[in-house]
Structure formats: structure tokens, C-alpha cells
Length: 336
Ligand code: SAM
Ligand code: DTB
Ligand code: SF4
Image (cartoon, rainbow, N blue to C red; front, side, top):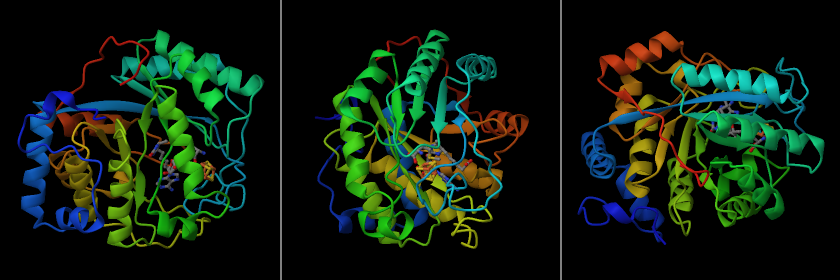
């Protein structure tokens, strides 16, 4: 089943779910300007005039996580200076959501440093946050770790638009980065989200020491899902002191552009989000990512625990490039 019935007729736009690694690699390795041109052609055929969705991110439960994800400042196993905090109160979260909306956000994403969701008062509180964000007229996305089918159903009932759960990298490289869960756990949660009728947000991180084939395998795994993810965040590693990856070399902007363009070509209708790592990128590099098909940003001075460009700088960047922020659309709870 395809998620882009309306664009199938355009010859540039190919919607497939059976990509091979050599095919993906051939796209990824195209001469750069040819790659960007093809990605931009697919982008325009699918979305028309370029628009950028502004998303706001809030860490509703910070730090103290039992998992050992080597990139993550919130794992309790590393000394990163991130303190473990309790789950925020619903009122505080909705206040932040209201501010984000006033600043132009149309999607509010809430992250919790949990391995998995446990039923009980904390999950009930997250459900009330989701209901509150939806009542403000924004898309609501949460990322809470692993989920059961029943928890996914309850999130759907609360009106959740999307669930973020990144595959992060290829199945082959995954074990080098995380040992406390495996790739199939990730895929099972994504299947539960899909089965509950919630939009899937799943992407990855560049710059962890993975090969180009690992990046292509990640994108191939996402694109070969029975239904493409509606949202694909592409993060550049933020190398946080105290994590095992603190000394990784920053990924080059051209590598970000190649991954984004490949994601756009493989998953024409997905929102491709230029996510973590923008502090390390020039404005020109970010614009090149948008030319290559990125159509969403997290704005606001903080991601979950690390920094992000200043609001005024982002607005100037978009305005200078003539990129319109996506208008809030009145939608049902069935998602983005
Ligand atoms: N605990 C939940 C989970 O892991 O699914 C949700 C929160 S977790 C922080 C969300 C995502 O943030 C991770 O899957 C990872 O892709 C991204 N992330 C975390 N730390 C990062 C870093 N230092 N640089 C780039 N992305 C990062
Ligand atoms: C995603 O792919 N990137 C966002 C969001 N999904 C939750 C998180 C980025 C986190 C970067 C590290 C931090 O700020 O702690
Ligand atoms: Fe925990 Fe998520 Fe960070 Fe992994 S990425 S340590 S699961 S908060």
C-alpha cells in the first residue's frame, strides 16, 4: 500500500518498497548536483512550492535512562552532566506547547528518556499531554521508547498524530551503538504504531562511525516498509562529552545532503526533517539540505538536552531563502 496515491502519475516520482542496496547506493553516489536536482524534482512534484514545517521539541522526562545508546547524553551509564529529572507536569508542558504554537510551530514533539512505556500514572499523564497539545490545534508527536500494541492504541485514542522511534542506522551497525535492545525490538514498536493507525516518524543519525553502506541500508529499511514512514528525521550526531562517541569527527554537510536527497527520492511523500546537528552547519549547508528535499526543522534554542540555532537566525534563514513556514492545518487526529 502506498502513502502517495496522488503523485504516482509523475514520472519523476517512483514509489517502491523493494529497493536493493546497490540501487540505493547508486542514487546516493550520484554526482552531487545531479542528486540534488533529482531530489528537488521529486520534492516539487510531490509538494509543489517549497514550504518548511516548524516543529518544537520538549524533553518531558530527561536523563537517567537505563539504555546504553552510545550517542545519547541521557543514558544513566555516561557522565555527561545531564541530570535525571522527573516527568514534567501536564500544565507546564502545555504552557510550552502554547508558546511554541505562538512562535509558529505546527507540530509539538515530546521526548522521554525511557527504555519503554510502563502502564500507570506516568503514561496516563503523557496521554493527557497528547490530548492537550491536540486541543491547541497542533500535531502531537511523542517518543517514549518501546511500546506495546495496547499502549499504541491508547495513544491513538488520545489523538496522537505521530510516534517517533528511530532505527538510527543499519541492522549490521546497530550492535556497535546499542547493546540493550536490538533492531527487531525497534521494528516491532514501529509495527505496533502503524497497526494502531498512528503516523510513523523514523529516521537515523549520521556520523557515528557507520559506513556509507550502513546509511544506505538504514534508508532502504525505512523505504521498504509496507507503508513508508510519513516522517524521516535525519540527525547529525551531536558528539556530547562523556558519551562513548564524544570524539567522533563531525559529519560533513555534503554527507547530510546526500542522505537527505536519497531519503527524498526513496520516500517521496515523507516529511524529511533536518534534525539534530544544525549548530555545526553553516546556513548555506542547511539551505542545501532544503534544496535536497528537507522540509522540516526543529526550532527553538534547545533540542532535548543539546543546543539548537537561535529562533531569530532560523527565521532570517527561511525568510532570506523565500521559504514559507507551513501554515497550521486543521486536521483530524488521524495524523500528519
Ligand atoms: N528514549 C526514546 C528512544 O530512544 O526512542 C526517545 C528519546 S531518544 C533521545 C530520541 C532520538 O534522539 C534517538 O533515537 C536518536 O536518534 C536521537 N538522538 C539522541 N541523542 C542524539 C545525539 N547526541 N545526536 C543526534 N541524535 C541523537
Ligand atoms: C529525532 O530524530 N531527533 C530529535 C527527535 N527525534 C526526538 C532528538 C534529537 C536529540 C539530540 C540530542 C539532545 O538534544 O539530547
Ligand atoms: Fe535512552 Fe533514548 Fe537516549 Fe537511548 S536514545 S539512552 S533509549 S533516551
